[in-house]
Image 1 (cartoon, rainbow, N blue to C red):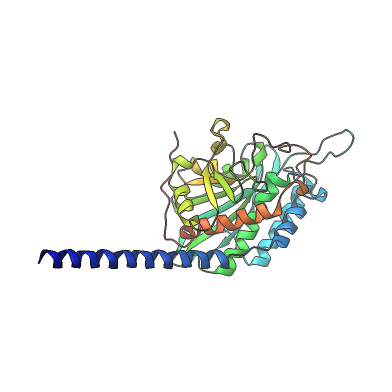
Image 2 (image 1 turned 120 degrees about the vertical axis):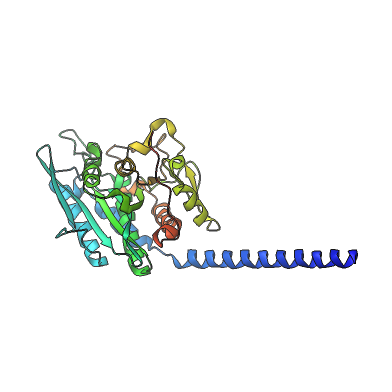
Length: 325
């Protein structure tokens, strides 16, 4: 009788192991299929990047003709994709004035299905610095990495999720103005929303260079302040891409990009980045040109954001509210 019990137990363990292995194999296959079907065209990514960081945009400083050109480009892309206006807006612009300067955030919505009243915001800032007033040589701060790369990501993700068509939650794609002046655009936006309806904030900043964490990696600001980053890490398992906590805690980066304006309202809003900022020679320099970026890094990072945030977009996961000390 004892031998029979041992034999039955062994069979049960063997069956369980087989079922576990089978389940893992199915999950791995599903992940692989999901990863393979997510494609972003590097040529299109390059087009957005090089247009937004071109000399024609004259640095995209807030309140200048250059930023107007950038806004028009973003609006045209949102229109082609088929995004709708946010709330009661009659255009993609959220107009306001600050210190006598007329400003505007550019926003478009992809309405959700079963949870359309819950929003995920995907953002980047489309402004940069003024041109040098005088001097020889290049005087244009093109801001390719900071943050034409992020805006490129916003546009590409909008197109991807529109084609995918399975977002249970609504997605608000926003290109903020006046980030370089102190997060002015995102602060204004935050004053006019019901923060409880925003379940996550995905901000993209400086995502066009390989980080010191290695190829096919990115890092996330404020990683310890919610479980947002852990959700992303889980979704990226098996894809060959990894997400790390911010390796630059001394720079206080969590509060230095537009995610902070929403995070202060309790929204689990974090910034993705790839740039090794401690050794980057182009940050806030006229040398921040499109040619200094790696389009493949930019494309892979956008793809990773798409995969990593899918369970939040489709309503399966809800990040914990962010903690602000």
